[in-house]
Length: 251
Image 1: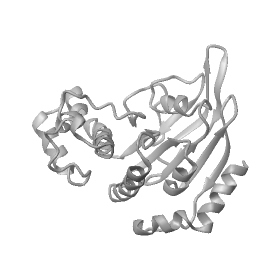
Image 2: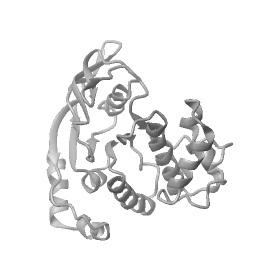
Image 3: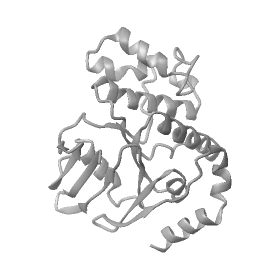
């Protein structure tokens, strides 16, 4: 188990937002936290990232208690947050600069990864010159390099609705790309969405958070997804895919 929570509860003022939340992430897994707006998904991720301290419970990374200790897990927020006055290259190496790492080595590492992230030839472009999908890939690369900059090679990523700003055609393309790169680089991904199709398409497991305060009401394992990304469109039209959707809607 690479990441887990134990009975996380968080209050805002006197209002309990999430209660006794237990989620787990295995190495190489892609796990979704699914739920309506306002059930505490982002609050949970802020606790996981150490940006908020829970009122009770703890967060474990490789068995080590990291509760309330930021900087241990790479965290990508809903917006890409690329700095408009910096080039793609200078945006993605920011984690190294912030940690006062050697800039030359940072540039070399980033340049090695540009082709894999679909950014080769765009290193000196500015965010305003990129498509929505390319901005997201740049944000993914910066998030991944955040872990490398702090000498953490596990590749644990927290992604808060990473695809929500994209149009449907671009979103599907980025889904395919992320599944491929996550497999190649052995990412362990915990991501938030309120999109049921996206949850079923991408996830190995889904935690469904419901209620006020938010609790993990259901856990669902997605079986027999096609390994060949070319067949994902067929899978999305399959009876099996639709049955998962029906099941989630029934909860």
